[in-house]
Image (cartoon, rainbow, N blue to C red; front, side, top):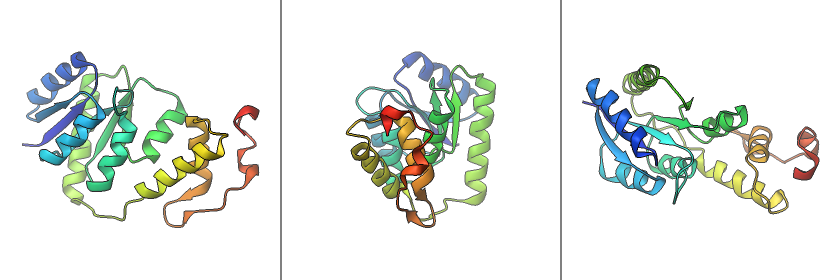
Length: 184
């Protein structure tokens, strides 16, 4: 039996997902913020994580980055943020899939099955983690953006300056010509 960690601050969503997943034969573990999710990964044998983005105490993407430092577990991000930049940011920070709310439960269960099938057939691949470099990119973006944090800036910063095989590259100002003037 596979174990799915459901992490969302909305208890009704967690309860509904528990019903759907247990009816499909999965064991579920619940967490209501990013800190609880990290603790669950440390104490439980988790096979897949369903992670909300906007949560109190520690948001889902920050929790995802911390989890990626220690574990190679499939993560499906569940979020009300449906902009393309949000999806790209979530996937580039380590998510294996990104599903926007509202979603159909049958589709979500199918995605869970697909990720677990892929994970178990390929095994726990211990590829070099790029999480540390992504953290550096975010820290640099916060400093560079006149001490203002903006996800769009980070997405473009990541896209133009981070390459998984080559590491951080020199940032060229012309890469940001499409950003709004007040974020340059």
